[in-house]
Image 1 (tube, one colour):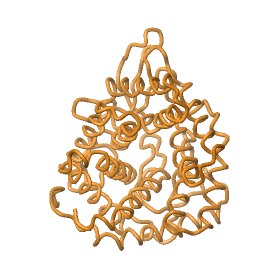
Image 2 (cartoon, helix red, strand yellow; image 1 turned 30 degrees about the vertical axis):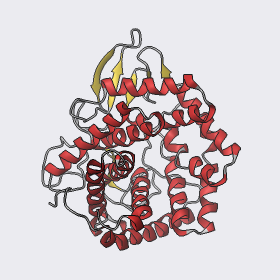
Image 3 (cartoon, helix red, strand yellow; image 1 turned 45 degrees about the vertical axis):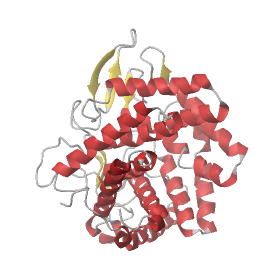
Image 4 (cartoon, helix red, strand yellow; image 1 turned 90 degrees about the horizontal axis):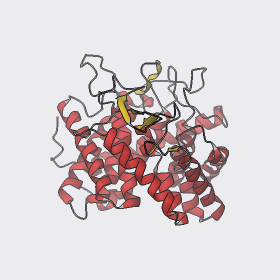
Length: 385
């Protein structure tokens, strides 16, 4: 396996990335045409429309988010119209107090829409969603509770807390900002481990707010290294740093990144297994969605640190590029299987519930395209890194 400190030819990868985006346009276009106003979560046998369980409805923003990326990529107004339509369909969720996923839903839809228009109405939706998510804050314990139970904190929430920071920034609400910071510090203290890995869930005593233990719903075990959760933390703390500029948040993101890259480097693939502690058998299940999230997060993390640490920034970019190169191989792309409706194969939703295992998953699709677009945006100025 090529080490991450070796040169990587970005120009050589560029045609492959364009092929991915062109294929994505066909796949997303067919999904919208065949199943209008439908928000899938994962495929079954490669098909988006099925009767499988959702567990929780947290993916509504990823389809519209892909459409905004395709609008940017193609410059076609038809994608703009679809993106606006699918964004409007989730607007009511700005008041949804039953989920912890409002960042996933609105940062991928209303934020790009607002950035293109400057519409105050669109920005107000983002602000409202941030304030709604903040209502999940538990005073005893100082964390945002997950959808599962009041005593539950998920690492996934690190990807959603940025919408609270956004609302605080837009309104000048210091109390809201401080609430979001407290959640980050609690997560750092009890969910992020010394080696940079993360637990999926932390459990608190509701009476005292005392932390009780680490556990999981989707990882191998409570003390294992569930890769999607680690990717959520890496990306989430990077986003948080963009708002706080607190080196504490940057240090967590870097620790997560180093842990992720270390375990990939020790494996025989730049596509992560669904859990780094899963048994290393011949048929060890990968999770391409975890790789896509981590690659996109690494690219942004490199952006944030390259002014003061070029060496580490280049290290992260090379790792991200190796991950994207691996994910774009034919056997992992939907184009390798006739009739496959997704873009990126071999993703994982919920192993234990047997939901979306070895399938395409909506968040994997979104963060994969996002990572590809990040590379394409910078290609002209970065020919070889």
